[in-house]
Image (tube, rainbow, N blue to C red; front, top):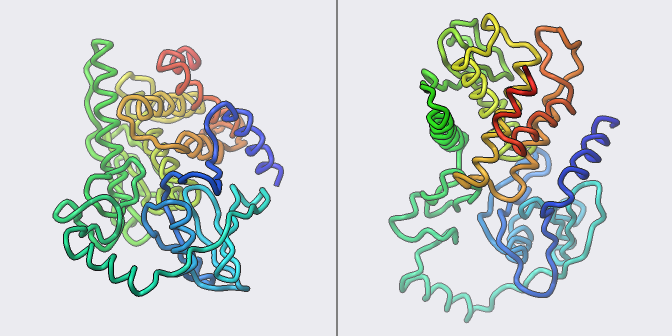
Length: 346
């Protein structure tokens, strides 16, 4: 509880100047957001409903969400939505804030309106899942694209592999250009490999066997190894950029290896915090350079960095830095650039 309180206060102080959560109002047309609905309370199954306005999202939650105690719940972007008695709409920014009333669910279409919509669809509107991709552009016509900055051009919901592919391409391009700007040669990692609890015993690296719930760079074979379940959990619990920042951190170790900044192929807390800083440098590029970041992604990366902190003694070989140290290193790279990462660790 104390740790949760600290992170809430720390992040609030860091991001108050930036645009925060979007609170819908009854006047004007709300912006679009990613909509999700809880379809099974027992298994906590959440299903995507595509990109829509707040009102449309609430209507769809009322139509598809499982009832429990006369309530249906879902998410619109980062807002929690509750539908009471299949009619009244309430929302809040997090479990620590008060529920606010928004209005009511839209009435169902009359038969004439429904027929008119069906006729319109037949004469040319074949964007069945309402994600903006029409006809042959939409590889997944029955499933809406979740537009979050990763592989948003195929009309399909993004997978973990989409995120990994996008990140590895963008990280490679960024660090190649950064090294070129400094007149230094740069070699990409030999490979980025993934594993999970079903197959991890079948893989090994030159640094040793796979470890569950882990991600690491092995300098001996120049490969990055990622546990799929670690990344999926980060995406589900915090957001897509929480998983992305883990990849950026491991890629930063590869950058350190290129610069001969890894001591005897073993990490110390200095190398770990430096890698956090370099992940922050890349994050700035992803925001203003390749423009992969959407609203809230920076916060997701910061939250994940804080959560990855530990309180191991400074000279413990496994120490990565306290939550505050990791967060501050990440933000230093984001705000001040690559030179601050190396000056801070020298």
